[in-house]
Length: 426
Figure (cartoon, helix red, strand yellow):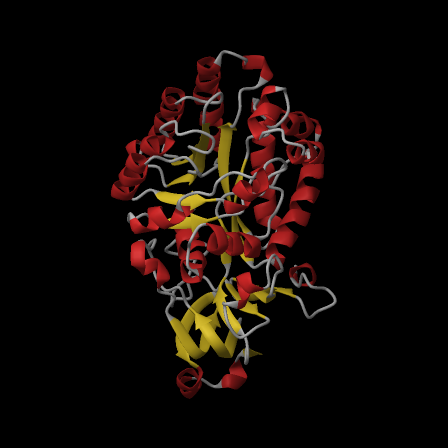
């Protein structure tokens, strides 16, 4: 299949094959009146429309005219928990009345509520819920998403979640990067026996996941009253020995040393980081750990936002993600995430776009394949309704994505009655 996208008012390439740091995050490499040539799902040519048209016979291509519209790489949501059973609207209501996230968790709410509902849910129910959530992400321009387990906290349900991600990856056009987060909380069966639970994961769960190729990353919630630095280190080093890539939920509620640990174990990313220390940020920058920031979570919890400006100025590569989950952040809206990052974290819009494209791709280990409009990469591309990327946060919380292409194939078109074109094509 051969397609041509031409006449883009702004072709925002975000060009690169590695995460961008510091001032480089502001460079979007925009081509005015740009065009992209795609063959067999791979980008073949990128440039000005008049130059591309001189080199091809346009009649050989399926042509999409993007006149008056901006074209960007497909967005990557590099931190989500989108397969779960049940909802926690009552907890959100309690937070509105003044209860904190940790207070709710200490009284038996929080993650444990989602664990019970997810244990009860069948695989078929979780697949149907996952498909609907992926469709919603698609409408916001997401073409690759990381999905975490962590609402099972036992062997069977953790494996069930990962198997659901694997099946969804097979049947839905969005690519899913699976992450095992069995160390998301202490299950009731292991209360006050944290290290025994860590040993159970290392000895029983990780070998099975590796054998069945169910996850690429291992994550841990390194936090006060959850998993300590020592407990987290033991799990992560064991996972590293099994050749998993590493992630951390780090320094979200208190400054525990999660950022420092991420640097020590050479994690791909450390996420949240609302309370990360100066030393931890410096160590992460030296080791090339990506800071994945989740402003919609801070917004939802009414917490202070992560210090994105300080992190970028310190040489960190920053990614942005939704943290879509049933408790602390029930949104899959990356447009809102971009708006919050620019309004409340002192990120420039250019830095925020970099953070959901090439840097987010690096946070899931796929920066060589996706995250930019470069020759040789997968043709994961979005077309906006408006002539500039500047409209993304301006139309606050609303998606202005008109079309989404995955591997060079149109999979979402807002102008059609059947918006999710992949359903007719599959």
